[in-house]
Length: 128
Image 1 (cartoon, rainbow, N blue to C red):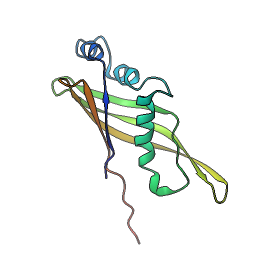
Image 2: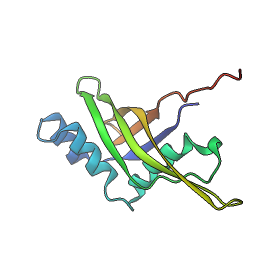
Image 3: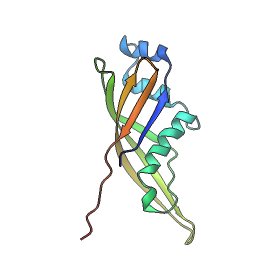
């Protein structure tokens, strides 16, 4: 199932984006803020959700945005989120690190100053 969440944004940022004074990448970076901010942690939580079934208490602490695109007419766009994920299997005290990339679509609700994120459909492995 696709992960989804909403965040509030500052309407001044939207004006700057629509006027061409702010790129979509900069808009998103400002929206997510610093690593310990609630918005940044919300994205980390969305990324972790794709690995919850893998076991090992997954944790994402940092991510990068790549290939961001924005359609001003539709107030929507997409980007890829590249991140490292750390797994800690407590019973065996084993630590493992992996890298992943998840595509996120987004839609701005201008009236409510919110942005809705929808992650890609997770891969389903066939049982052979």
